[in-house]
Length: 207
Length: 163
Image (cartoon, rainbow over all chains, first blue to last red; front, side):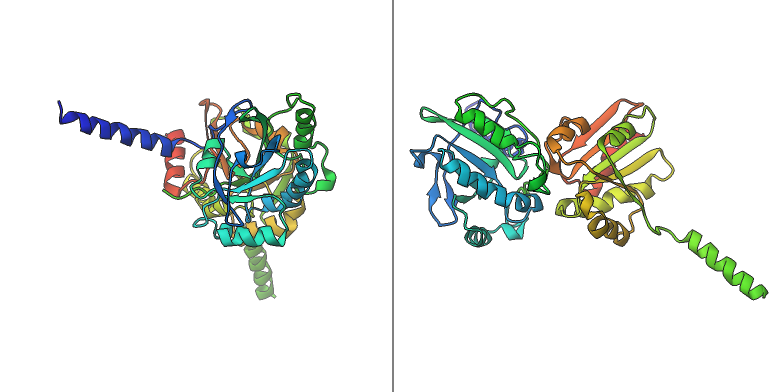
């Protein structure tokens, strides 16, 4: 029996770890969930956490990357969102979850170059272990999460798309994210708090 | 004179018989796609949503196209739904389909607001590509995959429908 115990413990650990690894990415956060903080490396080499910016009322967290045509189509709109909402207390935090071994253009050096070329005025973080993307339930790039501060915590207030036309910003009819931000900044829950968009699958590490 | 007749006939025959010439890519709207996927037939539909810009899609596309040949004698229909912008039809999609000599039917879904149409295609689709639905309405069976599939996985999944 005594010999059996360590064996059973080992089995349990193994079962739990496989559970974590195999847990599908689609679960993740729902609107209303508390978002866990993270510590990820920015393109300037420094580690960034949600807790760092004491003045932030919240964040617009964007899972995005260098390589996806949809991420590229939305890049300028993401830059513009930061310009508009950082001033109102909701800066953009961009996170690249792609495994550079699968998407070579998403290496840290490539991220640094992109951020510099496009003059990102917000952090562009590398989710090296892909833990943050899994925790949030991000499935594609771009995939947005608006977080609002409630005391010490950050609560998910909106998940989804920027707007309804990826190809041409001029033809957009509904700005989903901006509509949600208008509600959130007014202290109300977003009337549309979850939307879907086409994007590139996150390039998960190969098992 | 006879020789000439023969040549004309032979040329005409060759033109008609040439496979894969000018593979068409119909541009469709959501209601048409919904209609096609809701027919109460015993045909197994393998519907793959892809785009020319999507690397994992392009990688798995040959597995899907192969099904058209493998299951030619069974009631299996492969429908490759391009999610490229309609403005890219002549520039990207048609040349791609030609170059790959795709044997399966290719359509382009011309819709702009994914938040409206994704749920109407399938509520399980979060919007990532590739996305695949295998369905048989007569058997009331439907499975979806929001991921890349290997040839083996795909074959196994289709087998479960045609048996």
